[in-house]
Length: 308
Image: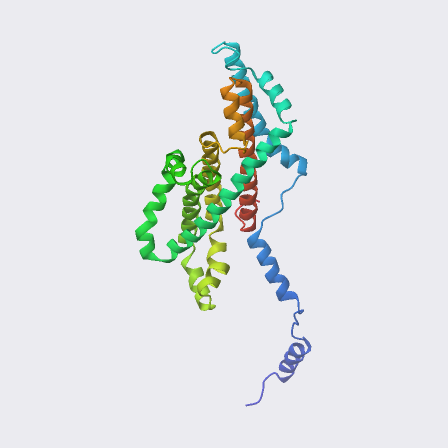
């Protein structure tokens, strides 16, 4: 059949033939994928100088400290207790300043922190192993799942009579209570994180051939990190409280820790030093909490869970 408009068809073919097919640069697809990853994993970088960000984080804490000191001073002015029993902030801070300049004080801090790091490290190791095993094997969860929660809610001071019977007045008695107080929280945090791993991710891992340890190493553990870090933070709180109770109850000869020095100050009725050591324990706890919050915020930012 003859073409009615041969010239028009030829013109169209000429136009389409003259336009080259779009050629994509080799790195274009890679750039798009990288951009999508960056959009998914992290939002916009926080604006503002480092000083402004530090001030935004610090001023609520400073305000809280100021309120506590003010209430403390008002109670002292009201003469609720004699000054030698409840000294004022000025006296305590002066004694604290003198205390932190001594070498004995830092020796005590070293002993306490060494115990804390050792006990918490053992608790993390044991809690991670138990949590991974319980989350993987259903019969094991049915057997000891409730037991782990029960151990977590049990006051740590209840373990000290048994610890003293087992290990006498030794470092092992203190570490025993620290570990048994913190490990259940770590295990429960990991179990909770594994329970909330999306089933779709597990199926994708199975399709990719992930099995056994590789499945935990590359899929389950990274996905459960947010809950796991919360468990670590809670475990540290339990271990720190257990350690302070242990140092007051179990006095190991030759180990002059913060708790021992605080007990000595109480025996000598030096209330100012007692309050000074309370402040030291509080400050150490706050600093560790700041470290955990920094790790949690970095993880949330990595996962794109923070605001822009």
